[in-house]
Amino acid sequence: MFAIEAAVRADDVRELRCVGELDLAAQKPFVAAVSGMEPDACVLLHLGEVEFIDSTGVLCLLGLRRAVSRLVVCCISPPVGRVLDLTGLRDSFEIQGRRCTSAHSCGGDGGCGA
Image (cartoon, rainbow, N blue to C red; front, side):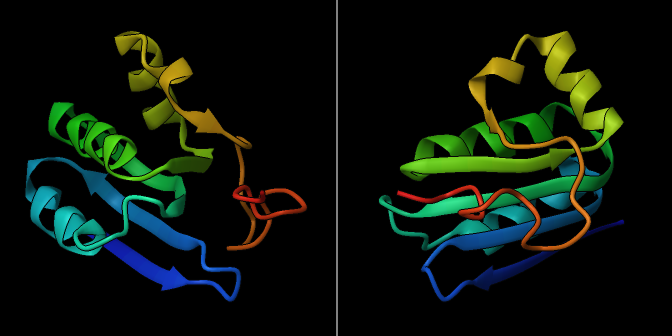
């Protein structure tokens, strides 16, 4: 099961929170949530509640990273961290913190400041 919540903050940062399994079944809802984002968008992506990620999920993350000007991952769950390490992709993402306790807990500027 997968869910993604999308919001636009007052500072125009696009905030996405993923919950559940980021896999083949999650591809359509993930793509639907990120489609139409401006190329100059800053996206704050919460992955702390992702319980499982497969190669399709990794491709979703890479596609989002290529589609927007800045992608900040607020936090990563242990399964996501493990896959990013195994694939050698951890350094491909800007990761602000390992844990998030709320939607706005990722640093003073929310992760996407100027």
